[in-house]
Amino acid sequence: MGLFTEAFFFLETFISKNVYIYLKKIMMIKNLYFLLSCFCCLFMNCQNDPIPKQEKTEIVGIETQQPEPQPQPEPNPDMPQNPSNIKILALGDSYTIGESVCETCRFPEQLKKGMSEKLKNALVTLNIVARTGWTTSSLKNAISNANLSTDHDLVTLLIGVNNQYQNQPFEMFQNEFPELANAAIQYAKGEKKNVIVISIPDYAYTPFGKGNKAISEAIDRYNNFIESYCSQKGITYIYITDITRKGLLEPNLVASDGLHPSEVAYSRFVERLLPVALGKL
Image 1: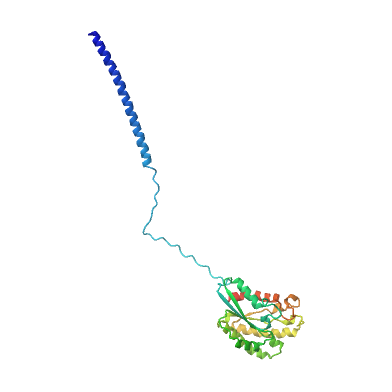
Image 2: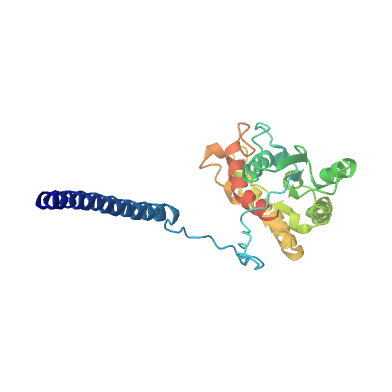
């Protein structure tokens, strides 16, 4: 009995010990599995629950407020509005046709060029009715036969020197100049605001005139009448006579014939004419 009991005790102890070890290993595996499960769950939660992005909100059914219209700048009277077509008519005598200077040197051509440069998008055309030696009677007859249109945007009138030079009665000029002025208005769309009357140059201050004061006094008489008439009728009058009275001190103001204005003198005419002409458009 003692041997059998001892053997049985040994066997019981051996089995208990191995079972304990086996159970302990099972618990360790179970704990490890539990930890792994927790880790996986945590990892999956991080993937499936990221930081939410900020959503865009769309507002439907609300009208967008329109910006208030900005006030437009006031038009500048010194800046013409660039009409597409400008028609100029120049009426006169040798001072308009440009005796003894090139065609592009005479003042109507220089005026046309200046207007074209300022009005870059406009087509500026020029018609000249003038000839050396014409008096007011000559110009009247010429324009009556010229079949001129009445849609000119600008008409210039410079006449009278040959009435004085040919010693015609001053009363003839007093009667005929108003007729020419009215004709100029008719050709300028019937608008006197589209007409520019230019004073008569003084040829006394040229080698031909030799500073003759009688010539200057006569020219003043004609110009005074022209200025007074234009003032009464509301017609624009541009005085350029003082430019020509520098001819003896500044020979470059006189053309090669020693009598008529030069290209330089005409350019000074245009310096006064151009701003006024642009302001009429």
